[in-house]
Amino acid sequence: MKPHGYILLTALTLLSQIDASTLFRDSKTLAVQICLDRAGFSPNTIDGQWGRKSDVALATYCAVKGIETPQTPLQAYNTLFSKEKDLFQVMIISQSDYDSLTPIPKTPLEKSKMSSMGYETIEEMYAERGHLSQAALRRLNPTLNWPNPPAGSKVTIPYFPPQDKKTIASILRISLSRFEITAFDENGTLIALFPCSIAKEKSKLPPKGEIYVTAYAPKPNYTYTEETGKKKKYIYPPGPNNPVGSSWISLSIPTYGIHGTPIPEKIGRAESHGCFRLANWNAIRLFELIDVGTPIVIE
Image (cartoon, rainbow, N blue to C red; front, side, top):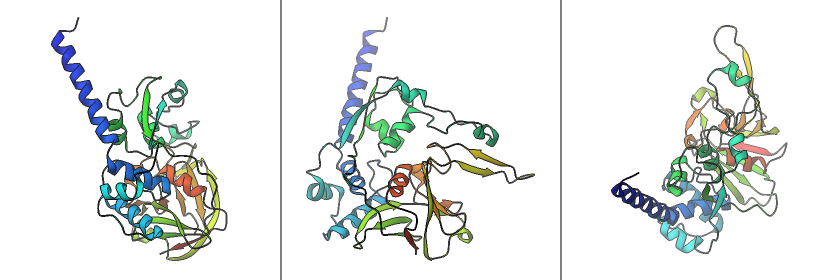
């Protein structure tokens, strides 16, 4: 039997966690990030922390709207997003969520034998569903036993309503200096902004100029070439933890593409092997905007 002091301390700790999660859920910074993401101007990973990517997303949104950029997240919420509703949804962890988990082995041979490179934890799964950092997911749901709360647990994450119609971009622009991909409609209006990562080595950066989309694939596999010995090749199966994530867009420059990544928190840096990386959810959204032949300007 637990002593009364232990029970009281546990109850107080639980109340403190609930109060902290309520304060975080009510954060105007978090709300603005969610609203910008909903509008197509991604701050990349939603985390309740205001930084460069959030600044760029807000400034770009305001430029498209033809309005002055608010100076703080609080001002942005009050002037632009205070009428937004249903910012969050409550989901229930299912047994099928657990059944789909797939621990990722370490060696290329073991990875090539997998049927799917799915999520390793419930935490990873629900953070991606909410476009969240895993730390932000924990802050929204501090009483759950992370990284794998039991089936039946309720999880609060941001809500992204389904889009009413599909828009095809007339052109994409990739900025090597700003680490971003932007999409424009047939009227030249900017309709989407996605932070991206580019090649770490300058020698692997693609040349500036016009290229185009040559092909695209949802749920792509990945060919890994072992650089030692006889350079064996291994084909990894599709899944969100595949090295190219949840979608692949081939470009007219051989071997180059735009794709997702299993590590969204690292987006916005010069660290790829040459391709353009996006958070998985942004790679899927960009995938829905393009077609074979969509022109791209690298600048």
